[in-house]
Image (cartoon, rainbow, N blue to C red; front, side):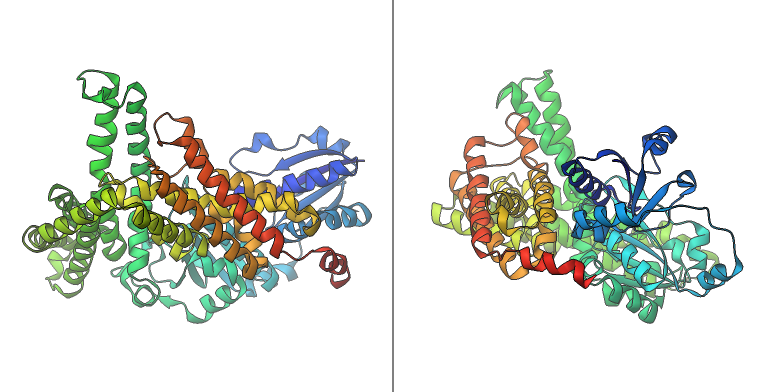
Length: 579
């Protein structure tokens, strides 16, 4: 049998690729010949050719949104959703082979148009600090929930590669409410006068239908002048979100700078001291430039999250002062909050004649907020925080084996508690901030522990195959790959289904890995990249011991979950009957 598989998940490639691979593998096991398309509007050349579609006996279309089906007219087509495909690929293929019907182009009628007009209309933005997993998973969950509820929803994802599916002005104008499912701050000027509801990506992912309904019921209007400072912001945004915004914008600078420093070490640990050499140039780019911009970026975008653009300049000035005064990332965090709230207060309480109002965001706010932030940093905050950071750095550099192991256990456990949630991000932000103070050991422990849950659960699907359904075994392979890339969210499908067993097993493995990494004295120059960072010489010391720590924790998680896991055979046998 010849089958054409088309997956089209409009808010990210993760779900599309996963569905395509699972369905393709299942079809191959049945001896079918397959052609697969992962639909991507940005790359139309990757679509299946007309000849390939014509040769297929039927087409399986897996999508969570409406797509152009004009090229499928006259073919036997069966439609399904990503949720159904991920739950049981064999059942989807079996139903498709039996129930696929010849697709006929629908005729335009007036009644459905009226129904669409009466349906609630929402637009949404999803964004997380790293812009890799939660951003797209939350968008997909919201799309599927909207389809079940009969709502008209368009979602823009602001991931690590920029905005995808950007919202048009017409879509925003027609929307009843704007849903911002974001863990970081996003620009809201284009939503002036619209009702806005804010929540985190975790809530949108786990409670998608409730989130959409709450957005319609509780969305509040934000004015163009106050923008992100309106009532909805005050209720839904806190200190933690401002901090994550700063970390999100700082992260690419840390990655680039850390890897540049590591590359300079390829020529020898002290080769950069020789003027005019490539090693010296790499150190100048990474250590003397990129790392010096880390703290100003952190502070600037914390202030930006609080006060929008008027807070950016005061925040970056305060961050640079924190860096030059030796206050490091802790001083930068303090400077960002001082600058942000100072700019917000000036914007709110400074009253100027209407003719001078336009000068506030350009002249008045940056000048006064920068002056206030700078004076506070120089005369109040700088020296005490510098002393505190120096003490913390000295403690981390000179702590004994017991303290190092305890810190590793703490950071490793935190990375595995909520798999990309607030506790995970807090441990990650702490470790990234220490890179500016040349404390590299916590970063190594944090990244290693964050890799353990998806790798360990992936291994569990191999060593206890009989306890896992075929779909779970396929998902385990995907989780294994994501884990190698340091994407902890690869374990979320398992944790969502079986949290009482997955989370303790993950914490145990992560804590062991963190402890071993600190015990071995591993130090990591870059805050992301997973095992692929090992391809860069000197990016991490004691590379083999680092791998041993990751393997040990992953095996502990795998064995623990394999023992705790209940067989899925009975549940899967009953699932088709429920449907």
